[in-house]
Image (cartoon, rainbow, N blue to C red; front, side):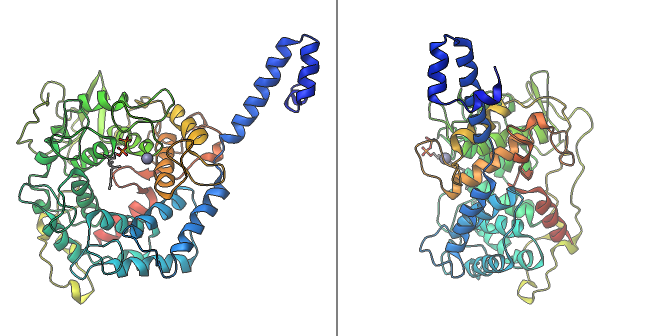
Length: 459
Ligand SMILES: CC(C)=CCC/C(C)=C/CC/C(C)=C/COP(=O)(O)OP(=O)(O)O
Ligand SMILES: [Zn+2]
């Protein structure tokens, strides 16, 4: 049968064929129509996403007058999504965003959800990631690192963990956001790290995933936060990584997407929270012979997790892979031109705690079904009119757009041997033009902006 004719097959043509008893022909027609529809739907609707995102940013700009405490998050979700698509915004929108975030910056350090609001670690993370995503002198130099360091010290609890805000809750999210911004800004020191690993370790549950606080249920969001934080402070080898892998691999559903916790529904945003866990494991741990081998010779695990099998399942780096620091102890790192920043309580000689892992090229396939995840995101989470959603039947929003696109990027690049080589066409579901910018999995910012920020803050 002529396949081009089959694709144009109308209902009456189908009926006619049925009458002629060309059963196999009918199957061909359906297969072709289905295939064509699927191919169309498998395409990232770039223009529609850009329009949805830019409109959202314009609504916030220039006065950013939406009355809620989420505005730095909206900036991050929208601008990071635009960056993932390989787009950028015009100078005016960019300037508005930088100026707005500056007004959210507290005079004693950290960022609130809006001008005059109390500084909070979540909005501080969102603001810093936004400014890193925008890049350039104006955005990066707007961050008052000295004051931010003071804020982080104030959020540090005597237990070693962090609070989200003054007198606020202590959880793994707070720990991750604190060390993520501190690492990006090159102010992660001994004081910030002290006893932090033990707190995170106490949140690894019997299932293997990580919970928000000790005694709670393992969840993808907190597992990402806990694992990333442990890598950033060089203590990932203290976690029971074998058990963590067992937990996360079973979170991918038959739909291709991930659930956040056992017996719950899949949701597009976990494509990043769970997919990002695989990216971290692949980039920072060697995987082989059913064992995970952390690549550092990192710090002590002074408190054993009750579930830990450290020592039997996990051994020290076997190939002399530890100790390639991306930073030095050079005290000049923390100079600021701004006189406001002239005195600063951070001890620069202690800034030596950037993660010391080197990239490992495992040459093995990802531990999750990356094509199934991409198919789920494109067919079920993508709103063809622009934006992404939790699942069909739900509305699109900026949070899901950000984390679905981040998960899509992670999964397209999940076979990659290193960040400098583009993925092969086989790794990308749909047309190759679907390919998104790669991210840095520890911070979820596009990788070229991560490098720019690292250079900027190490000068
Ligand atoms: C950097 C940062 C701030 C990270 C946040 C990480 C994150 C997404 C945590 C998830 C929190 C949580 C328990 C959601 C459960 O919601 P639910 O019960 O509605 O969803 P579920 O049914 O899918 O578990
Ligand atoms: Zn979600």
